[in-house]
View: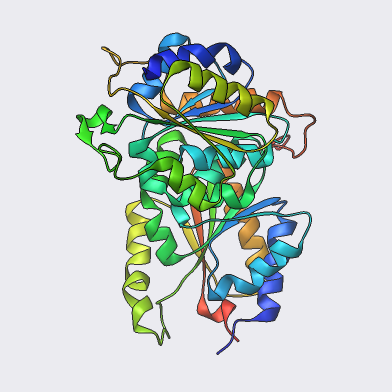
Length: 169
Length: 203
């Protein structure tokens, strides 16, 4: 299995079509091609972090300046960022549009991804974070725009789970 | 050296700069000097003050961003020094008040208390070029003025006593602080770069 070159491009184009100007990320396999595009695109400001919780602060900073921003992370990174999500974003009503590589769900061959995959949705629900699955390259651009719009109007974190069907060929 | 004294010294310079402060004593001492619309008090999420500062500095290059951090907070996010060093926003001054104490949560020792951990060395090792240390008021004032004049990212590690204000309390709700801080920043943008997402739409 390889990461989908074509769908990575479609997702990146969807991010740009949603009016996003800034991206924070921690690189991982599924997000690699996407991040390469972000890095090469002069219209996108890419900030790579050491740990995903940093990106919650960076996203808040971008929001304060009125800069449309999305966060790219793996679901384990989402789990690592929870205190920032709760005690910065939710406490202060700061929107976050999180595109999350959803590792460890159906079809996952790697044992090390499985616990994180199993708990991702229950944690999203516990935190009252609206989420949706992105499975289809034909609809993912619309989903990114809608996730961003909801985050901004609800002043809440919103998650779009990038699934295996979308990310792998 | 007292943190309250340091804050009082730089307060006149803060009137036109976005300031992000950590929780507790540092936030309260800044507030006690007189709240301004350009002050954001991060009352929780320890460690993220400098990340917020980076997000502002990168996206508002016309602003000089001041981050007021502490040893207990920054120890929770040491990766921030590496990220700051990588992107080195020229318009960011990151001040870390090191009192060797988790003062606001009971005065417990931190890893810097007996000098075991040296935050200035960590910042330098992470790749931050301009790292100043100050243990006296004059040194701190000079380091701050140099950082203001220098058009490059600066970190100041300020050794301060582990004392805080006698009373805590602010007439400011947390989401209100975020809204007003953002509004202040948006009012100073060179032009309306990006429209507000739901502007002009009917429901």
